[in-house]
Image (cartoon, rainbow, N blue to C red):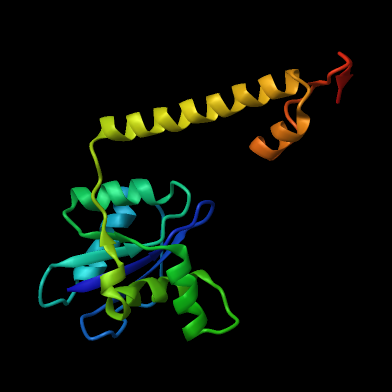
Length: 182
């Protein structure tokens, strides 16, 4: 089974590399964008010349850049593994002590299944309604935090407001004396 190591980027193109069962790289570093045609080309490149058509994907969750890629490859029945950023950093330090690049990360991601397969867990995408519910819960929690911050600010307890939200509050804050502060 071949392994695709995919280093995701938020603003630029992703970097990918394909590793065979023996641990040798089958391709050079490939540049891929999150477009179905390019993701198809990457999958075809990974399967090219392989004894079996089985391919697996290892990537580090970067923001939400991983989600469309994961959905696309899940529809293609490709096993997907999301790895912890710390695991990637540790293995990168082992291979390239003082270097950090997308090329190195793509190679490290591909090797993670060979080096530490017990620490990797296969991604299972829940239904769309479960994602919507999870997002609504996060938004509700954020709103509750903001409401609490406003109440504490109105009560004049700016230290608790700053500790809870990590900032001094909104654009204009109400102090205990009733004067508006910037």
